[in-house]
Image (cartoon, rainbow, N blue to C red):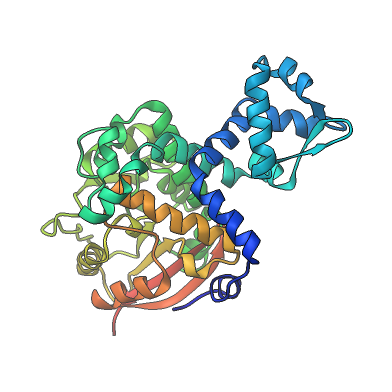
Length: 368
């Protein structure tokens, strides 16, 4: 197994003393309420108040500032002390925010993850056991009767859509500037298929960065409709087109482009499918390629992460795919992705690591 240096250090030897290990076990056992109490410390503004205060706040001051009952504030503060997001001075009885609390309040990735887990995943994860045993997104029934979450995206409640797209875009958007340079400055791409292009956010970035590129988004027909509304009237929209396709349908072929195709872009896309399905998608992509075409696969491969907390987020995200998204995909590692690429008759030309929030781009070509 390939592991980055940080993961090699964290995952190959036990790091905790027995007492710390016992505490972590209890932390896991109480995980659901740890999450909800911490989320509410953010939502009610208590962590921000402590952050803004000069030398901390008493419980009474927090009660007055929030309008919550003394009982509610007491429960949240005592829980947060044990969680580790606040500290207390026993003499003045003033509370202050801890380093962990600071990250909970201020780290953009953490805030996106909180919203995603509360609005999208929380109730659905109650059915994780069922999903793992049956290979289907058993938790999705909380929202609707669809085979995968993707068919239902346009019908999800507004707040759930906001948190889903916020999560999806946060991680991809941070990598876009570097990805654009790789595709257009290094490879001079003029024709590009954006596979699984969602709202067209990446396509808009492409046509803004390059005045020559023409982008075709390949996605489900209902997603193409959302994309067309989103790009309408924006710079370069006339160079963005849509092609409705169910990529799980093995008979649905990628369109052939007259004059050849420079690039096929797959960003945070293949993780939405099982390995068998990935091989099938890549085989169909190969049929639309020439020797000069390159596939750019941008993924957050968990084993290539520079920092261990990123790997934690990614492996937990795999269980979102299990319980809610589709029941059979995950955040893959390098070995998994290389296997799928080889099985499709393709090969990796180069890998670009550490883009944005931990992305890698695998540049893939037809196997010689």
